[in-house]
Length: 123
Image 1 (cartoon, rainbow, N blue to C red):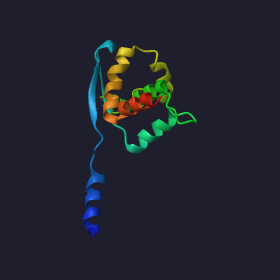
Image 2: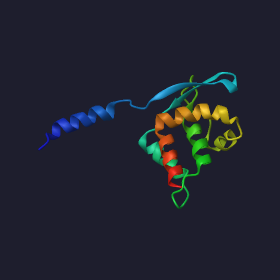
Image 3: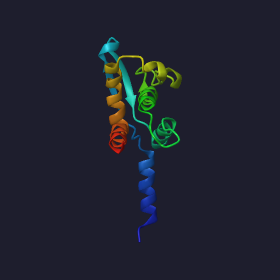
C-alpha cells in the first residue's frame, strides 16, 4: 500500500510549480513586433474548447484559431492580453502568415495542433 504522506507531499510539490510554458515570438509582418505567447492551464484550455465547439461537439477551426491567439498572446512589457475576445474576430482579417507565427507557438505550447489534426482525421 502506498504511503499517503509521500503522495501528498509530491502532489503539493507539483501543484506549487509554475509549469506554464511561454515563448517570445517576433512577427516580422507587424514591424518585427515582439509578443509573449503563454501556455494555458487545463481549465483555460477546456473553456476554450467549449467556446469553440458547437452542440455536436465539432470544433469551429476559425473560432479556435482566433480565440486561442487572443487568449495566449501577451504584451511583453505588461503580461496583459493584447487582444480581447471581441477583437479576435477582427484578428482573422490580418495576414495569415502573421497569424501563423502566433498560432505555431500557441499550438505547440498548448497541444492544440495535435487536437486539430485529430479532428481533421476524424472527418
